[in-house]
Amino acid sequence: MNLLRLRSAAFCTGLVFSTIAVPATAQPLSVNEQRGTSISGQWQQGQGVVTRGPDGKVIFLFGQVQPSVVCSPLQVCDIELQPGEIVRDVLLGDTVRWKVEPATSGAPGSQAVHLIVKPSETGLVTSMVVTTSRRTYHIQLKSHHSNYMARVGFDYPEDVNARFAEIAARMEASIVPGAGVRAEQLNFSFRVSGRARWRPTRIYSDGQKTYIQFPSSLSGQDAPVLFVVSGGENRIVNYRMNGTMMVVDYYIDSAILVSGVGRDQEKITIRRGG
Image 1 (cartoon, rainbow, N blue to C red):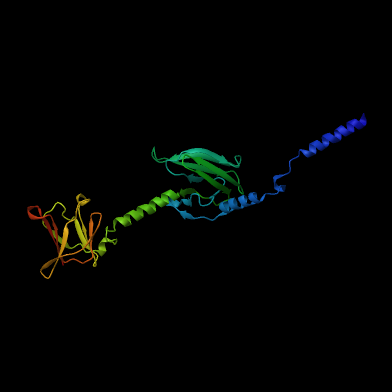
Image 2 (image 1 turned 180 degrees about the vertical axis):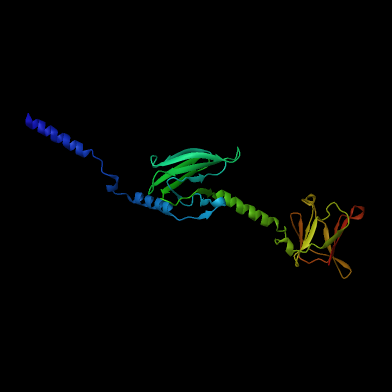
């Protein structure tokens, strides 16, 4: 009977020891796990671009790296999100020693959410995930005994691309169609006389070619014949049409545009100024 109890006790003891979990730090990582943690570490520890925004705000480029926000006890870190962005959830790795409170700024309809972050002591490191109506923020939080970032914000790739597109559009608007060069490099000193339903709206030259812009009503119709006046004679010259733009491979001094015959003929005279 005693032997049976001893064997039962030994069996139970072995069972207890066999169910004790091995610490995660002692478990080897697979090749994929090692590669995954390495990739994540590179993103977490990447330097990224940090710039100064208005009113001393620290600006991170969203998604480039995991931003590291430094806070300090008895101070507050203000993390400002994009105006109009709605916060869904705020998740903290350490909810005991870190506190996050919401605040808002701006007019209704374009309000910006602020996350007011406060650590309770120094030497803390944790992570914070913020999910919103537009994106997910992954932020590292550190506490320092005196240094802290008072204001933090983000630049967003789509906004940066939009600003570049706006600049490109302004630059493109200053390029005159057809010539492909800036307006200040062109000669617009052409005088136009005569009446025609297709009377040119603009004529200019880059010094080698002449560009004659017709109204949109000419689109799909036959363009007028171009005569260049030289030595008192009218010579028909070739040109090519680019939409409603007539491109002439000459620097025209005097020319005539003619369409139709007889009483239906329409004629426009072009002369280059000084």
